[in-house]
Image 1 (tube, rainbow, N blue to C red):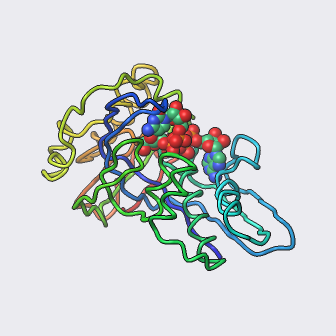
Image 2 (image 1 turned 60 degrees about the horizontal axis):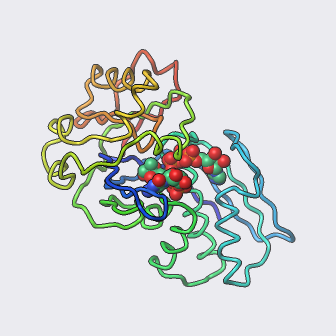
Length: 270
Ligand SMILES: C[C@](O)(CO)[C@H](O)COP(=O)(O)OP(=O)(O)OC[C@H]1O[C@@H](n2ccc(N)nc2=O)[C@H](O)[C@@H]1O
Ligand SMILES: Nc1ncnc2c1ncn2[C@@H]1O[C@H](COP(=O)(O)OP(=O)(O)OP(=O)(O)O)[C@@H](O)[C@H]1O
């Protein structure tokens, strides 16, 4: 079975409080971004994980695809499997690429071995692998709360919107990014702000990581500025960075920009 785990963008992100479990509560809207890895799973004589594409730091035994398999294997009698992951989505980018691999692995194993697990059960397994993972089970726009793994529906359709995502090559670890942010009440009501025309979001939809990280990594503010200069209606850091994106409604494709050749860029339609 071959699946294509996509990335995500955060539209607004407020880090609202410290939790007793050491994590932070947040409020953010997640939307799927069709920048994808490729993950193949085949029943095999013995377990094997092979990797190509962008190198993934750390021991392959801790790869999130593998951890997804181990998690299900603890509860079900799964046969051995050969997984091949071709990594495309940059790591330490705030695009949730590793989390998507884990969630798509859970979904693929459920189908391949006919485990008949409901979406809600798969979400519960995904929550055990990482805060971002559960979103990728249903993979639809949502308003996320708590650790970013409890969802409310949101009426937001950005399908077909031209988007450019720029990854400046900085690996910003999620824990490092959270350590730089002081929790505070949300600056705006995200649901209300996102219901207004996109041109107003610049003033009313913000990401708390941006303020904290831009003072350390000046390239983040430069990229955002460049996206606005190229005509973006809205531009922001995604998640804990370092990827910065711009949205260009009304265009058939995002504009080309002078920095396209300098950084890793994803261009396309949401
Ligand atoms: C920044 C976001 O991408 C926004 O969507 C996510 O909150 C990050 O989620 P993630 O990468 O799945 O993070 P996890 O693997 O669960 O946690 C990594 C580390 O980030 C911090 N962390 C993460 C999520 C959260 N709500 N509060 C936290 O404080 C913790 O230090 C944790 O040890
Ligand atoms: N399949 C995978 N893809 C990417 N990273 C993985 C994978 N499996 C395990 N990891 C580990 O997860 C870490 C990446 O997590 P990190 O939170 O820094 O970046 P991210 O993937 O951009 O996530 P997020 O968008 O949630 O912040 C890497 O250091 C890597 O060791």
